Image (cartoon, rainbow, N blue to C red):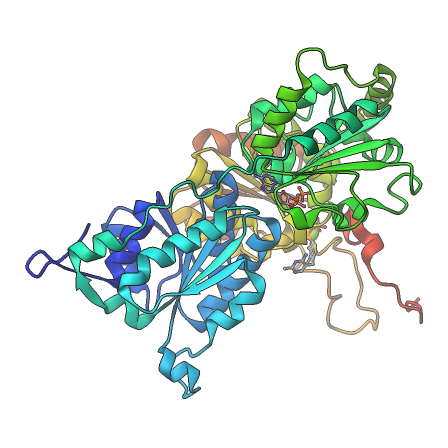
Length: 571
Ligand code: ADP
Ligand code: TPW
Ligand code: MG
């Protein structure tokens, strides 16, 4: 407890810091300014690690992924109105992706804000935050800081995790109170994410349906990765003998090279499975809402859905066997109920899936060995695939369109929570924030595979990476634009097309400006050497990987989502 000994007083600043520390928060992701500059200074003095960013959005994305990686809320601190709004995208992102995060923003004087009298950075932040977060709280009195922080932590972590907003008006920080009373007012949250034990009958219903299946499939989502029940999930999948499909950020829960992985037979298993068990994955757009051409004919497939949020059941289609519980407790209950004599899934089905996987992997293999210059996606990613195989502890951060889609299917992941990407919204801009938090929270090397457009959304944070000397290697897949570098302005006018960037840009030189290592890589061999050297030395590195500007396709794999003009495109 920090206090002014002479008067035995504490204040809002110290109560906030003490409340966070009491609850095991070790790192703050932030941008300073009125009214939180001193809060960050004092936090550093009190032993919290404060990572100071160049833009709040990236501090926010860092906090969100820290939450995913640690099951503790990642904390982002911003100044009022504009700083708060910059952080809000990340708060909404955390909520959408079910990551625990707390956005703490300083705010202006309530009396002036509410009368709209034009205070410094005036905004009713609480009202603005509410629609995009799981919960929002404001603390007006120093003696309530302990409860405010406790409520924020519990709301972020319990049930379906999400983003929480905590509004701290500037005046609060300077409020003083008796130090002993202040210490007593703090709350250490007991069991912030209580277990949700699934009802035994729901477990029995699910297992009996699974047992009856001829062509069962397990889909693992990022909720399963978040749950940190890695050993039990693997044991369950292996005991069942059922092929499994990992969603993007669930890759590595079992190694992608596992004999039961159906990753390379995605379209076959989605279409042909008769019983599908979803574990921590929503039937949203990423799974075509569980219906339509991607799936089997209506009525031929039955679903088991494991999720902590009861409202998720029947969200898109009827669920035959809902299991509402936390994944760790649920998978443990499955294993227990399966006993020692559980029959493995029909061998013909697993063999059919295996055949398909091996065929597709073999078809892809030669393309991944190509030495084309300029590089195409396959040549460049073939190199990275081999590096991740040799260095399975490395964390992959990935965003872009083609850069994302190809990397997701080509780079195998071998350990849980080692692939971090654009998530539910397919958002560009997570790259550097995620890389920074991944390096800080895990101490592992990070390789960020970034489209040149994607990189641009957070590129300035390479200064942050250099400042904190983080072991991050950024590989910019530079194809000179969004999707391709070849588009033309339809009018033939002077402005270039809206999807293309400056030709032959040298992103590596940006890194050199901050003292990091910059490399221009034009061939797969140069790329391999540069990435290996970066991981070996642990120095901030940016590799400008020159990719054929014709290699990509519009919107990568989701071009079908582009609206089509009925009037028709200009020839
Ligand atoms: P993906 O994008 O990988 O398909 P989603 O983000 O759509 O995954 O789904 C994650 C789901 O996991 C959410 O519905 C969320 O409620 C659920 N979830 C998160 N943590 C847990 C947990 N510990 N136990 C059970 N379900 C969880
Ligand atoms: C916050 C729209 C989707 S993908 C993409 C944009 C702008 C960039 C693709 O180009 P990149 O990759 O990164 O160079 P590549 O290999 O195909 O050339 N704003 C936000 N999020 C999204 N998703 C977009 C815009 C978009
Ligand atoms: Mg590009």
